[in-house]
Length: 270
Image (cartoon, rainbow, N blue to C red; front, top):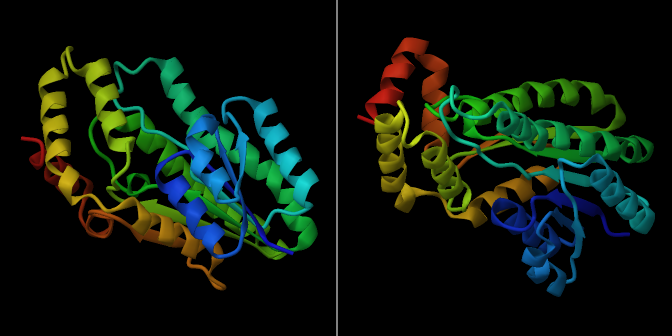
């Protein structure tokens, strides 16, 4: 019997790459995303594709019910879906801030709740939560995004303790800068929300700095392989840190004071 893996946000980027990696390793893979037309290549390779919207409870319930009905088990859940809504904290509408939490935290938590009973019953399972180096460090205009990732870090730590007695592992992957559409979407949103107001000058510098780093970003398949490793290795670490600037920045944050880190971050956007 093939082991079953669910991957949210499988329509692009790290989610899609992870789907291919786990499929190559013999897993029965279910790719979940709102944009099912973007997952035609998964279907062509023999993977299953389901529509799911993390902001709609009935959509999450239906997806998990379908998988359990078809397979009778779930061995791996990769919580990859998420996005970065950038903008000055003062200017991002609270409704947008709530949506950021709805996708990055509450939707993730809901699918996890629905998967856990099956994992407890089989006394085994692996939950891989895709956080970010942004769950350990901070940057201007990423306040709402960083808040969701800081929350995910603590939530995952608590979950790991709770489900360990049932043979279930909880692993966090913390990507650095990756070659996906995530960065361009975040910067576009930043300019739309805060590019023409009182924060406009700083926004321009942040976008310019981001553009300069594009050719240094880590290829997405490097992260796909790392996530697949976190999902399948016999004895996983609690955290995997991978990607452009991830290890140096998180390591630096661990050792320097808040004010020193503030100065270092802001020195990059002068």
